[in-house]
Image 1 (spheres, rainbow, N blue to C red):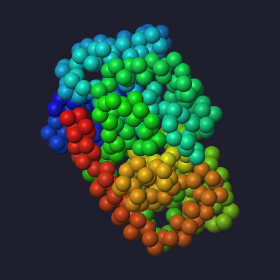
Image 2 (tube, helix red, strand yellow; image 1 turned 90 degrees about the vertical axis):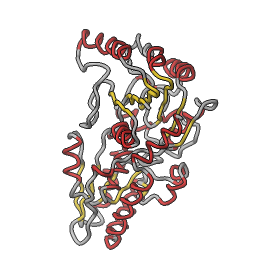
Image 3 (spheres, rainbow, N blue to C red; image 1 turned 135 degrees about the vertical axis):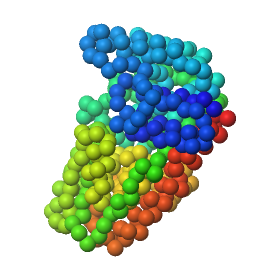
Length: 357
């Protein structure tokens, strides 16, 4: 198949491209405007430029790029259903892209116009929305209101143009309602373990605990810091560091010597960073509630630990893990095996191919 992947989210499309290539498909991966977290891609839909002229370019360039594309069997979106995000031109590329592909596909895994967690049909005990909103780190105006004209328009466009859909975790399963009359699958996040070195957590030394928020409000950094303050009053056999604002390649180098990773506390499910750190052999705290683990059968054997947003519970669990260093080697090995078995990018790519077929 000829496939175009539009958008990027922590390496998802980068890894999916590799899996699809391994299966013998022709694949291109284009990002929207910004960086792809230091991962390779095949170009962007619009230049990154400022000012009035830059704004015009960001609105018009995606339409020009879309019109110049060749024909594809599938165009798949993540974190968006459009390459145009201008106030007046948003979604105007969809009729063009619809002519460029036999099928338009959408993979729900981020807070875009369709996947916004606040619209979940489930009553989560907690979500990252309140702390994300209060932190001012919102991705766009659409986050401000649970239902608004932008959402209505996006639903209308999705129902008209999108042919198939998939979701990566229970946090975004409400998107399945949009595809109730179309093919829809639950497909786990793709991880490329060949690019992740195995540097397992080690015992008999001062343990290093790291928290690496891309967005502090979304990841729940305030709760993590409160938990670490509590833990600091109980023991001193560890070092705690926060890693943020550095390129992905530098991040990987720093994480080499980390033993325990606290990813996020308000999620129901593990995201890309948590899964990649499991593949690297780290002890991982992330979203892993019983509800979240129910989304895939294999998640009943998830090797990470649920990171509670309650600072006392999180501190107590961290202390318990620090007292279990004799299990680190076993947990690290199992974490790697779990990712290779359930999130291998080739296996995941094959699930997409089945959906698109």
